[in-house]
Amino acid sequence: MTEEELAYEIAKGIGVTSIEGKYGSVTCSTAGDYPSMGISQWEGLNGGRGDTLLSYIDGGDYFAGRTYSDIKGNGEKGDLSSLLDSPQGQEAQNIILAQDCLEMYIPELKKVPGLEGKCLIYAGMWCPTSHSTVRRFLQNRADEYDLTDLEVLRDIFRDQYYIAASVSEENAEGYANRADTTYDYVVGLDM
Image (tube, rainbow, N blue to C red; front, side, top):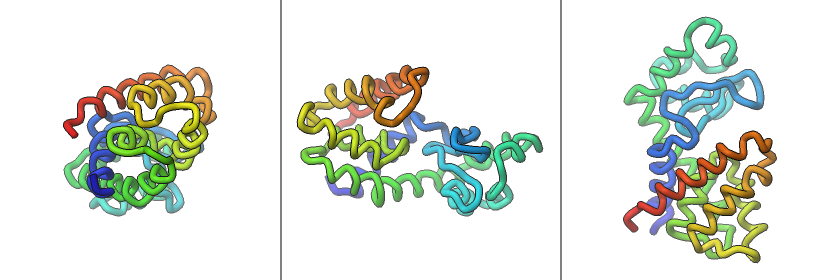
């Protein structure tokens, strides 16, 4: 597969499975009082990538640079959600996510020896959590695990990734569910 085809498959998988969020998702970032939005949970406020997303959607600039508390407190969270879930909002998210996959995720994953095809797509679907963390996670396990085996990838992401990503144990179940959902999607790809 070409890098463009891989990027397309990764982006499509993230969108179809909603493992990061739905098109209209609007939540408060765990890193601060700013919105985390859409299928890749792009974060807004002060020029963040979420603000870039909003600039691609008619009416989106109204929400750019604002805190999550401000948007929610003014009763506008539903309006932002509807804007993101609109056809134009979905198209903008698909374009940005495909760019992210092509420009950030695939170059990082290509640094992991032997990672290709469905295994690369699987790993790529984890990259919105942190593409550099995913790459280091896999590189640190390349000598110990067969990263060309999709079931092995699922197992190490399910059982170990939350630790590598410095996520609390209370979120381990969510990561395990993500590992299984991602596996189910990728194993079903006709490639």
